[in-house]
Image (cartoon, rainbow, N blue to C red; front, top):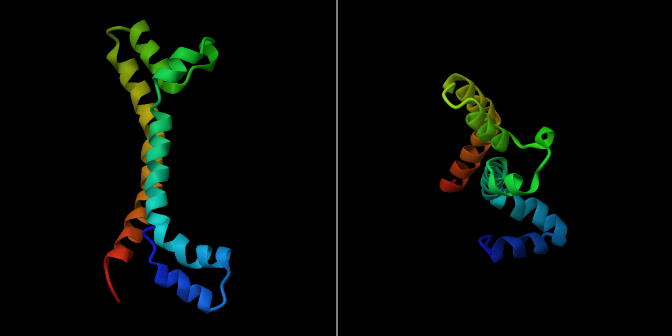
Amino acid sequence: MAVPDELIDAAKIDGAGFFRAYLTVCLPLIRPGLGFLGMFTFVAAWNDYLWPLIVLTDPNELTLQVALSQLNRAHGSDYSMVMAGALLSVLPLLIVFLIGAKQFVGDAMKGAFRG
């Protein structure tokens, strides 16, 4: 809905079909939004705690967040062990953000300027 109909009509006048207009006109315009949605979906799935806690019963198949909370319970006052686990759980999020942030900010700034 955010893509102007005039751009799609111009692509159709140039002879592009539906899929070609989508790939060459719509997709480049919505790519920053898709990147933002992808990063937030990954973060939400990565930090999911309650559902794996309810469903998983085998201690060998726990997700990182559930295992980290059990590590906190097992080593109550050993904060160095808990902080090392927390650092390991944050590293994939930082890597995804660093990879996606440059593309996301670059594409967002392209749409902000005219010319």
